[in-house]
Structures are given as C-alpha cells and as structure tokens.
Length: 469
Image 1 (cartoon, rainbow, N blue to C red):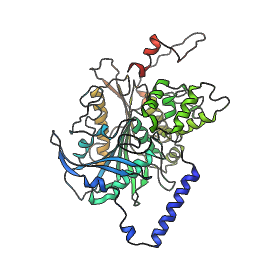
Image 2 (image 1 turned 120 degrees about the horizontal axis):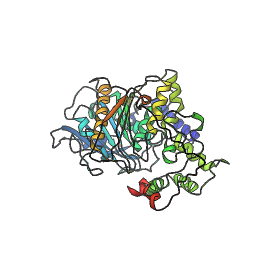
Image 3 (image 1 turned 90 degrees about the vertical axis):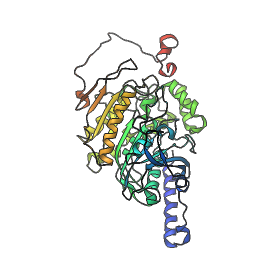
Image 4 (image 1 turned 30 degrees about the horizontal axis):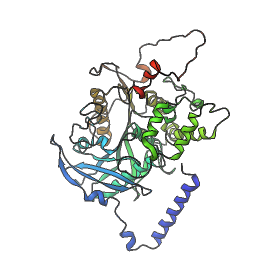
C-alpha cells in the first residue's frame, strides 16, 4: 500500500507542475499528447451476425500512473451531438476485457458449457446498439495490460476505472460526447468488488462519494451500479470467522477473531497469478500457513493483511461513506446486487451485509437484491438465471442512465435452488430481505461438539469446492 506521505508528495509535485504550466503557457501545453490516440486510430464500423450496428475502437491507454491498459470502446453506429450515457464493464480475477465483449447483440462467448452465459443481453454490442458508450478494459496485471495485480485496491484498480472513464469523458466529439453525470458500472466477481468501491469511495474529501474528476476537470457521477457475485468484505470471503449473520451483526467484532482461510482457493489463486501479485500477498499466505495463534498476541503481518483486505479493498468498511449517507450529505446511487445462493467463494452474505447497512443508515435506500443459483466453482451455470438478473440490470440502467422505462422495484428476489442444471425457478419476491422467508427452523446439537476444517480424504475432500470443480 502506498504510504500517506508518498501520496501527498505526488500531490505536491503535481501541484508544482500545474503552477508552472499556468505561469508559463506555451506551445508545449497545446502539444500535450492525446492519451486516446491509439484507440481513436483503430475505430471502425461493424455489424454483428444478428444485425446490430456499432463502432468499435481498441488500443492501449496509459493509466494515471503510466501503466498501459488494454482498452476497447464500443459506440452506437451513428455519431450524434447528443451526450451518451456510458457503461464500464469490470471483469473477473485472471480474466480480461473479452469476458464481456461479444460478437453478437444477444451474447456470445463459450463459458462453463453454455454458448452464451455471462453475456446474455449483457455485453458491449448489446448496450452500444441501444445507445450507450461502452468501456471494456483489462485490469492491470490481466490480459495484455501492464503492471502487477493490486487485488482491486482503491489506490490502483479503482483509480484506473476513474481515470479511464474520465479520459473518455474528456474526448468529446473526436470520439463520442459522454454525459459525465450518467455513468453506470457493471462488475462481476473481482470487478464487482471494484464496482462497490467506486460507489463507496472518493479521490478527495472535496467530492461526494461515487464521484471523481477527469484529467481535464470534468465531474463524473455514478448514476447506477450493478455488482454481481462479488465481495463487500474480502477478508471474510477468504477467511470467514462466522461472525456475519443475515440478521445483523455487531460492528466491533467483524474482523476479530481472524477466521479460517479457504486454503485451497487461496493457494490456487496465488499459483495461477504467479509473479503478477505483489510480494506482500505471499508474506500474508506464509503467515497464515504457519498456523495459529493469529490474534493473541496480535501479529503485525496478520493485522497488515486484515487492514489491506478490508479498509483498502472492501466497501463495507468505508465508514466515511456511511457517515455521509447518515448525515444526508451524499447521493443515494441506485444498486442492483446479484449474488449466488450456492457460490462457495462469495455467498449471499456478501450482498446482504451491504444491503442491511445501507437500509439501516438510509431507510429506503434504492437497492435491489437478486439471489440465484450461480456463479463460482460448484455453483451451477444456468443461463435463464443470469438472464433474469440481466433483465433487472437492463431495467435499472435504462431508467437511470437513459431515463427511459419504469422505475425499478427495489425489492428482494430469489430463484429457488434446484440441483437439476436444466431446471430454473420459480423466482419468489418480497419487499425486503426479512420478509422473504415464511418461517424458521432451529436445530439444537446437545452437548459439546468439536468441528474441524482439516478433514482429509473421502467425504472431506469431496466437500472442497475447489477440488471437485
């Protein structure tokens, strides 16, 4: 993580440079290189097999710190003087920008055995052919982008998203006129954690949360956010401690005690990412693998990891955002959160904790929940399930970005889990989470019992979703 004095040193350098430029304007200022030059030079019209017309541009764009990012922008076929709403797609961990790039409007891209799964009415061609500007890019350390993976840090990946949307908003008619007040973000898995963080952070205390400025000073505002099958507490997702309940939980005990790591999952991620991850992540893993005690006495490596995974990367821990909401100093940006009942990495609690805190602090906050049978590892890949989620997402984005269609119902909807991969539904709904159930079941295990996560072989191995997926 960058140190505070390092960040302010950068700010000071930028301020001095800006002052010098203001004092001595000249040809150099006018000759500032266009950050989108490579992207613009590649723009060309295209028509999909299902007759969707659009323009598409691809190229490398340097981010705020010079890291080259692989970017694709998809635009409506006809240039217009009207300002376009913009949607940014944020892809999953170790994927790349192609995750939500499609050859057709309806969606293509083989994924988990389906011809179209994640992209069903949820891709660049779909949205561009319906009047949106669409940004797809590979996160740093992913695909053809440079740099190392910083694990969705608000200091790096979140700033990348802010910078790229800002550069596009600055482009003007040379590319497309973007309405900076109508920015929508779609994020799944790794990208979903960033989508939540774009809502709950701000680059400077002078701005509202969910807003940022472009390189040329335009104010960009989130108009709607769709985070799906992702985290709001990355620490709990990777090492749950059992303190989080759907009915609420004590704020003071969320990070303590340190939970039990999802060992095979973490090992698999680190092995696949290799040297693209910062060295500190391997230090954290080595300490976790060394075993308990983690908390008594406090271990500085464990404390560093817990802070990095919560304060720096998890929306639930952005206390300034919630304080601003409580004091009515911040906008209520509409949210559709989609989470999988059977997802072993990011279970429903990841969306529920945010839902409950938003509604508690700001009654009636415009957030809708959809719970289905998807997404990671052993969760099923049911096309109708995600198609239902995408339909809700389209309604939200169309209403708040294009100002068309009916206002979404900010309720809770849940698809009944069925082990038959071809079966879907029914989908039940309720006004709120607490009203979704009609009863409860209590099971009492008499006497003392010992539980363990270290069951090897036989049923123990088959219970590990990483092993069986």
